[in-house]
Amino acid sequence: MNPPELENLDAKKVLVRADLNLPYHDGQFGDLTRLERFLPTLNFLRKKGAIIFILSHFGRPKGKRDAHYTLSPLAKTLSNFLNHPVRFVSDCIGPSVEMAIGEMKSGDVALLENVRFYAEEENNDFSFAEELSANMDIYINDAFSVSHRAHASVDAITKHLPSFMGPQFHAEVQALHMALENPERPCAAIVGGSKISTKIALLKNLTQKVDYLILGGGMANTFLHFQGHDIGASLIEEDSHDVYHSICEVAKVRNCQILLPNDVQVAHDLTSSNVRTIQLDQLEPVDKIFDIGLQTLTSYEAVLKICKTVLWNGPMGVFEVPPYDYGTTQLARIVARLTQESGLISVAGGGDTAAALAHAGVQDKFTYISAAGGAFLEWLEGKDLPGMQALKNAMSQNT
Image (cartoon, rainbow, N blue to C red; front, side, top):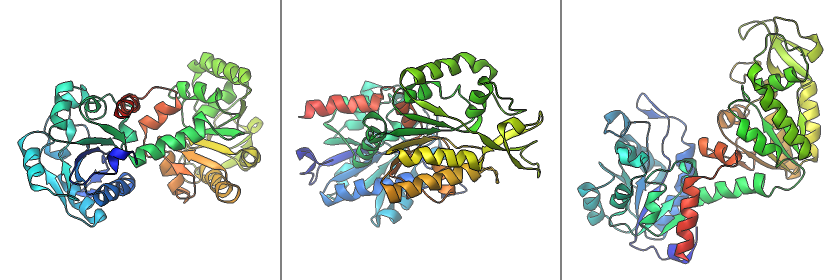
């Protein structure tokens, strides 16, 4: 975040792409993690004397102005967190932005209206990006979470302004590089979730890069089923046979060991009070697997103890419904303890993962927990991210 161009920002008009797409219900914003992580960027820019214009999307207004998706209420919340007034501008282009530019001074902050009120945003329209950049001096993308979108405020905008990576964007890239691209070994990936079909690319990419693939959730059921285990009435994907074999083949070639549960928590349904922890060969035809058991946790812990890096995506069971939060919670606490005591590098994110780790009370005990969602998952799948490539191209031209 400290190239020479960003050391002399006094009175420079800086357009910052943030992701402030926060949960909003009954007039209140919910999880404020993304806002909290964005504050250091704002404080840095204010300290440098920049005039700051924040650009974000909110919800899915489908390219039309919709009062339900205005960012106006967020200006007050942001002001309170920043302990400094944040001006709300009723548009993200045009006369209202020009007026704000003329009235603001060094250290001032303005929040622009929802960029998705314009269909041109999601169309990555070059001319719209030019309008966004009008009268601005520098563009900073501090929203890794939108970098998988080829949108005007992420991609095309970099063609119009000197463009740089923000500190939170940089922190995310560093964490993912540390966990996946150049990990300390041995390296493990913990992957849960209900279906293999939603994570085919992720599983194939991870088996090429990690030493241990630790599975849980419904996808583990499918692996067990294709290995010949009778898993009762548990969730499986019968049509994933070829995918299962291809993943196993990649793992074999890459010397990646796949670890699966050997004992499980079962019941007839999620509302049943007859919950049992049993060995795989004890399942009855009406049993459904909803979580991993203690023996599985012990075997997973033994592997994690010899690892130096772990990447986590997805819960081990139906963690939203106790007692099936047991496996996910205990495994999260194991990883957190090893991170704190043994220096294990632990990076997690995507889907329900952050919520599961918060439920376990360890959200501040991992090396890094991503709030990026889709961008995090696409990185794990090995895909090129348009926003990342746009920044790389722009920053190479800045030097």
